[in-house]
Image (cartoon, rainbow, N blue to C red; front, side, top):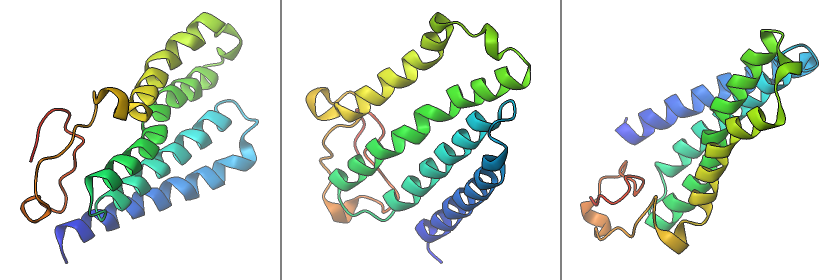
Length: 147
């Protein structure tokens, strides 16, 4: 089994576990922390599925595109975890609009940076590697670094 296939198996297993857990929690979404926890698990599943797909895409453009989709799951997990913990602590009513904006501001800015990357290339740059010299599991997600 190749390394890419082994990683794919692990990512898909993680995604399946997240989806089963989210589906289990979904009927209890009205309980404190239920909705943000289910959404966090779904975001984690999206993150893992996109990682599995990215391993098998042959072009930098394809890897960049799936990474832009993946960022939805990446940026959502931490704020949703915060919301679940906040609700479980019984402090849901104490979360002001300003605090809510603070929790989501940086993740949303990161998502906007990912989606507008062709305009500024802050996250992904053009890869100068010929396809034969790049390892199958390498991506252009390393900022300004090349192969």
